[in-house]
Amino acid sequence: MKRLARNTLVSAIAMLMIGTGAAAETKMRLAVETTSGDPTHVMLSTFRDALAESAGDEVSFVFNDGGSLGDEHALSELIRAGAVDVIPMGTDGVAALDNHYAIFDTPFLFASKEQARSALDGEFGKAMASSLREKANLEVLAFGELGVRVISNSKREINTPADLSGLKLRTPSSPTRMMAFQTLGAAPTNLPLGEVYMGLKQGVIDGQENPLSVIKEFSLHEAQPYISLTNHIYTPITLVMNGAAYDALDDEMKASVKSAAEAGVAATRTLSDESDASLVKEFRDAGITVTEPDIPAFQKAAEPVRAKIAEVVSAEFMDAIEGMIQ
Image (cartoon, rainbow, N blue to C red; front, side):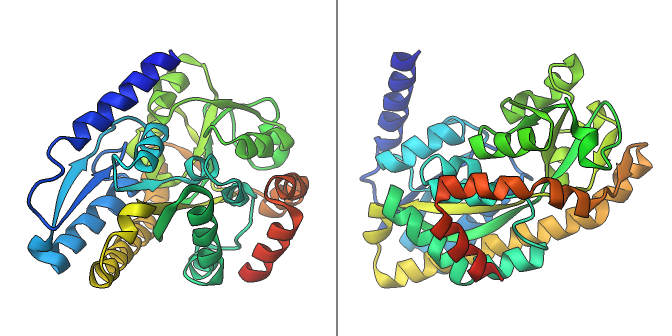
């Protein structure tokens, strides 16, 4: 399997390298595993369109979406190999490259989306960007928004942490996310997002956790009648560029790239707000039981998770980051 994976990566790199010496001053290769409408796709396509408008014929694009070059893990390998220039990433993917990003798996790290946005636009965001550049040589162009995560399942209403007991809950592959739900009493299971719908239908898993927009996009509400608005984790979209490719740009193009990334931020935050405002009613109208759980009880139950994540990112880093957020 490893040899096959390596061959696949080499083939993808070879395919991407064909013709890259062509005509435009700057040729950017963009890739995302999702399709139109998903927040990560919105982030990348808005970046592309904004940069095309500002830079004109000084830049051209190769845009690979729908997982045509592989999933997020494959794309993270391609961008570090220099075969792709810009990709959007979720925090579990980034945390595999830089353990400091595990801090985003701390439940209730942010009191609200507004607080998270302010922190990411300020000192906290700069610290996270600096860390990723140092550890993986990836330039963070901006932090967009996937959204706040909620829990959906096919078994019962989730109103208190006790209701999670024994629930087979799909989570991303992040070890710290899985640890957080183990601490809360669930039985976390890793499953690719594209397989979650069938996993729910077949009873392989009982539920999952994602922003409302993702539940809608993947039709997960059709396979489970309960949604609990836990808002337990805020997940940004980290739009990254290969460090060497970014450094090769002139100052004017760097400024255009960062400005285009901010357009992606605005688009994903708007999408997040619109989804949160409309989908609760839409789901309830469709017969889904949407509940507002006992958030203080979840916060208290999740307190031990902070110390465990501090062991991953270091207590000093955790304290420094929490100081920036406050």
